[in-house]
Every structure is written in structure tokens, then in C-alpha cells.
Amino acid sequence: MSYKRLFLYYVIFLSLIFSSVSAIEPVCKWYGIAPFCFIGNSCPENCWQAAASDRGDGAYCWFDQKNYCCCVKKAIDSIINSLVNSN
Picture 1: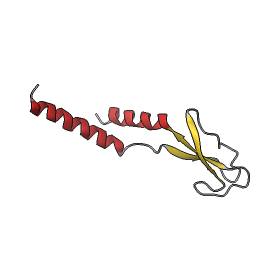
Picture 2 (picture 1 turned 60 degrees about the horizontal axis):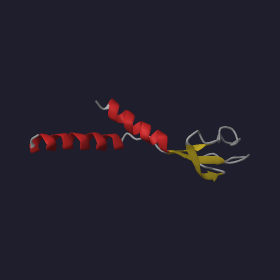
Picture 3 (picture 1 turned 180 degrees about the horizontal axis):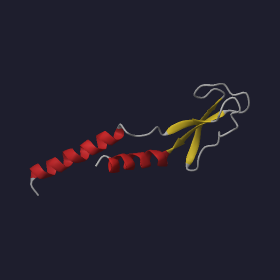
Picture 4 (picture 1 turned 90 degrees about the vertical axis):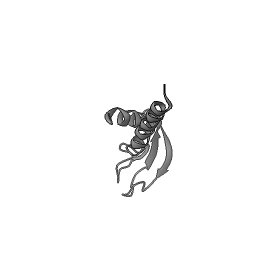
């Protein structure tokens, strides 16, 4: 394989990687519906609680707290989907 062809494949590969980075969904998200934040404040499966707050991403909780949950699988899935959909 010639160096020019190898270089071209390398450039295409890097272009796909860098274009997919901008399409990545947020890895972490607040869960809980104010003012009754005990509704829907559980972290989804394969996620972990990184923080908890009475306010979180906006409205104040009267009962319980919002949870800030991070999901690794979601980030990996979004990278794979953006690579597949970019073709």
C-alpha cells in the first residue's frame, strides 16, 4: 500500500472522528420533575448519580431532590450512531 493511500485513509478516519465528536449527546443529565422531584429522579440503568440538588437545572424542588446522572453507554452509542449516520 502506498504512503499516499495510507495518508488518505488516515485523513478520512480523522475527519469521521472529529465530525462525530461535535454530534455527541450530553453524557450527564438532571432527573426529577419540580416541584415534586421524587417523580422521575432515579438514574437510568447503567448510569450513576454524580450529584443531587434542590434546584438542579432550574425549578426548585418542594419535595426530595433532583439527581444528576451520568451514563457512559449513552455517550458510546451516540458516537457509534453519528459515525454510522455520517456515511
